[in-house]
Image 1 (cartoon, chains in turn green, orange):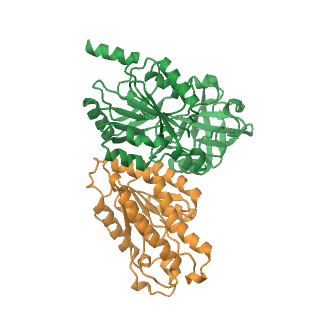
Image 2: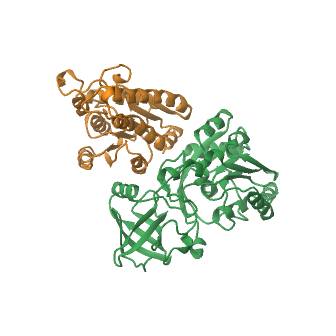
Image 3: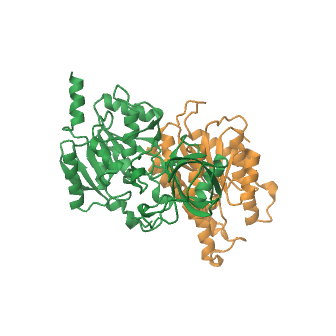
Amino acid sequence: MATDQRAPRSARLLAVNASGELAHLPRNELALILRPGDVVVANDAATLPASLPGKHVASDAAIEIRLAGWLSLGDPTRFIAVCFGPGDFRMPTEDRPLPPPLRPGDQLSLGPLSAAIECLLGHPRLCRLRLSGTRPAILAGLATHGRPIQYAHVPEPLALWDVWTKIATEPVAFEPPSAGFSLDWRMLAAWRSRGIHFVTLTHAAGISSTGDPLLDLRLPFDEPYRIPKSTALAISCAKAAGRRIIAIGTSVVRALESAADRDGGVRDGSGTASGRIGEGTDLRVVDAIVTGVHQPGDSHFELLRAFVEDSFLQRIVRDLATHGYRGHEFGDSLLVHRSMNHTSLKRRVTQEVR
Amino acid sequence: MLTDTDLRGLRVAVTGGTSGLGLALVCQLRTSGADVAFIARTAAAVAAVAGQTGALGIVGDVGRKDDIYPMALQITGNLGGLDVLINNASSLGPVPLAFLADTECEELELALAVNLIGPFRLTKALFGALAASARAGRGALIVNVTSDAAVNAYPRWGAYSASKAALGHLTRVWDEEAKAEGVRFLSIDPGDMDTPLHAAAIPDADPSTLKRPSDSAAEIISAIVARLPVRQSAGAER
């Protein structure tokens, strides 16, 4: 993808502080506006080429499989998958036809890979899939035949280098943890020089949308994560000292809040984030989030309702629109601090005082 | 050859792993217990070395842009991350070696693609994994295999020399930039070895006067061990 389309160096940031003040900034000023002592937590998952074109063997019909969830993190033999009929990424997913009727045991030919439907999961597009072969053979097949999940709003086909953030490590995400596109090594160096701590976790970010309203209501699927000891320790120390935790992306919020312990820190190790975070969620760990500009209604946007009141969120949405912020995975960014006036925060403070 | 170094749990990727120095590195790293992924262009040779050593074989060409991320995905997906990357694959450029004025532009481009741009691309694709390893206290090291031709002006070695000189300087600059992340870079000249690459460059060389690749591999592994944190059998964090 051409650099000027993603334009990371010209990206913008709408920064909202805890008092509700808004500031429009170049995104690279993230290097300057955080406080010494803050702990920034990012998701270092690399993104799988999760879109696999192929054929439904019994009907010889074209099919596209989008891997969408792990049954066991890192085991590439079994996935939850969303299936589409003919078409490509230039066609919005909303308009993609259903796949041929799928039954347990149906075989799929996916380039060098072969797969079998284990079962449907309550929707004609959603299934559990088993890929044949060893782990190295399956990863080789994905690497050579798979493509990153594409977006109709991005005119050029996306390659893996477009969807891996600069901090990408293990390929466990199905769509990019796109808030991480705001990071580069210069920013990390600037944070280090200002006493801002940078740590990571690995969260298998799932798909953001299927194009099917009923299926989208089931998003996000359960997402496994892994928190290193060093990250858990940095967060626990910061919370104990009253310093802030800044999450880069919704997947980090999901992982940290899922791993929150009673002392305000987080448990290290593996876990699974399930359910939605939104209005009424009591955030125990994260003080602020850097995220993309998402549409009201999608799960990424709904998560912001845990940070600020709806009325204020509407003001943010208006501001984003008025100033022409770019949405979607490769657009501009939003830094939102948890509002001091938010109902859930007031409720927790009241409980703690009691 | 190293026989008493315990590298269990160390995750290493080697490019050009089916012949010469790369093959010797793969064999010795596996003997020492490291988890090894290697890359080479020929599927049959990759399968043979993987079968002999138990290392993970990946088919790919570091000189091809489109191969880089699929390689990186297979390396980190299979090893669960990466501690050490050895950019060993090399191209002589024109064979037989040629004066620069006789070297085709495409031959110079090939040498640069394999010896400079390829290592740059692969290191960049894996830099996040290496930095994560450093943050976890495991250490992170990139070894770029260079040559005395990078500093000496040997006639007819121009394409190879220029690419290796550039790789050497890339290594020095990147090491300065990345040391704060805990990621270190090292360039190593393994010496004139009895390898297929040397035979292609100087067909009439007497092999008995050349270094054994296994001796150079042992030196490189010693240099790697010296630059990584003291390893504990199960203490390193994933």
